[in-house]
Amino acid sequence: MKREIPLIITSIAGIVFAVSYFIPHYPFGKAENIFGDWISIVSAFAIWLGMLNLGEVSLRKIIRKTEGWQLGVIVLVSMLVMLIIGFSSVFNAISSGTSHMAPGTGLKWMYDYTFSPLSATMFSMLAFFVASASYRAFRARSLEATLLLVTAFFVMVGRVPLLDPIVNALGITDFPFFSAVADWIMTYPNSAGQRAIMIGIALGITSSSLRIILGIERSHVGGDA
Amino acid sequence: MADASPIGIFIAGVLTLGIFSFLYKDNPVYKVCEAIFIGVSAAYWAVEYFYSALYKKFWLGVIPPEGSGADPDMWLWGGAILGVLMLCRMIPKINWLSRWPLAFIVGATAGLYMMTFFVSNAMNQIASTMQPLIQDTFLATLGSFTVAIGTVTGLIYFFFSKEHKGIFGGAAKVGIWFLMVTFGASFGYTVMSRMSLLIGRLDFLFSSWATNFGQMF
Image 1 (cartoon, helix red, strand yellow):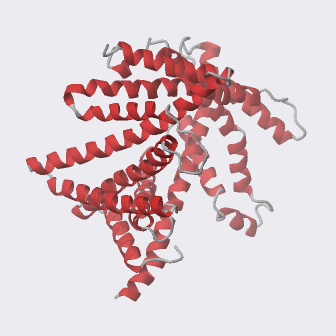
Image 2: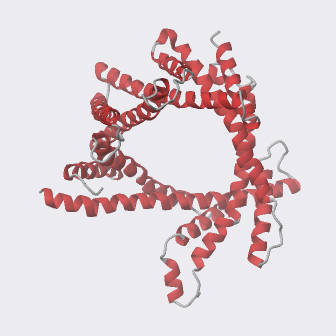
Image 3: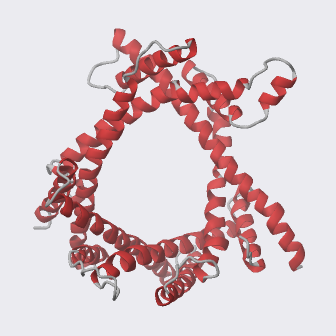
C-alpha cells in the first residue's frame, strides 16, 4: 500500500493532464481544472512544510548548541518577525477588502526594505563570481573555448552603448558594428543551438514523463528506478 | 518607493553592505545577513502562498463570499487533504503518507509537461526550422543555412546511440561549435543581467542610501 497507492495516484494525475490536452471537454476538462486547483493548494502546503522544517532544524541547532547556533536564532527571529507582520497585513487585507501588499502595509515594508534588497544583492554578487570564473575558464586553448569566448565578448559589448560610438567616431565603420554582430549571433547561430537543446530537452521530458505515468520510473515513491 | 521610509532605507543599505562584505571574505556580518535573508524569504513565501492559495483559492472557493452567487466548490477539499498529508512528513511514524501528494504533483507535472513541452519545444521548434533556405538578402540566406545546419548538427551531437565517428562524428563536432556559441551567448546575457542588478544595488547605495544617511545623521 505504501508504494502501490502513490503509483496509482501518479498515473491517474498524469493521464488526466495528458488526455485533457486532446479532449478538453467533460469529464477531462473538469478533472484538469480540479487537479490544477489541487496543485496550487498542495504547493502552498509544500512551502509551509519547507518553512516548518527550516524552523525545526534551526530550533534543534539552538537546543543542542551545535556550531553556529547563534545563526539559528537569527533565522528563527527573522522568520517569526516576517510571519507576524505578514499575517497582520493579510488579516487586515481580508477584513478591509484591500490588497495584502498595498503601499503602507507591514508586509510591503518588509518586502521593500529587507527581502527585495537582500535577494537583489545576493544575485548581483554573481557578477563578481562570474567574472572570476570566466578569468580562469576563458582561455582560448581550443576552438570550442575560443568560440565561447568570442561569442560572449560580442554579446556583452553589443548590448552596451560603449564600443559602437567609439568605432564610429574613429571612422572605422558608419554603422553600429558590434550590436549588428551581436544581433546576428543571437538571431541565427544562437537560435540553432537553442533549438537543438530545446528539442533534446522536449524529447527527454516526453520519454521521462511516459516512464513516470506508466510506473516504470518509481524513484519518487521510494522505489528503484 | 515614492513614500520611502528613512529607517527602511537605512536597514536596506546596511543589509546590502553586509552581503557585499562577502567579497572581502566570509565573515560574521555576512553570515548574519544571510541568516536574515533565509528566515525572511521562507516566511515571506509562506505568507504569500497562504494568501493566494489557501485563502483566495481554497477558503473563498469552499465558502464563497455572500452575494457572490458562486456555489461552494467541495472538490477543493481534495487538495486540502493532500496538502495536510504533505505535512505528515514531519511526523516520523506516518511520514510515508507524504508520498501521496508528492506522487500527485509528480504525475500531474509529468502529464502536463509531456504535452506542453512536446508541442512547444519539439513540434513548434521543428516547424520554425523548416523555412525556405534561400532568402531575399545574402545575410538572411546565410542565416537560414546557419540555423538549419546548426539545429541538425546540434541534434546529432545529442544522439548518443551511435558512436561519434566518421561523417556522423564530424557533424557532431560542428554541433559542438554551435552549442559553444549558444553557451557563450547565454553566458554573455547572464553577465549582463547580473551586472544590471549590481549597478542597481550600487546606485541605491550611492544615491538613496547615501542621501538618507546624510539626512539621518
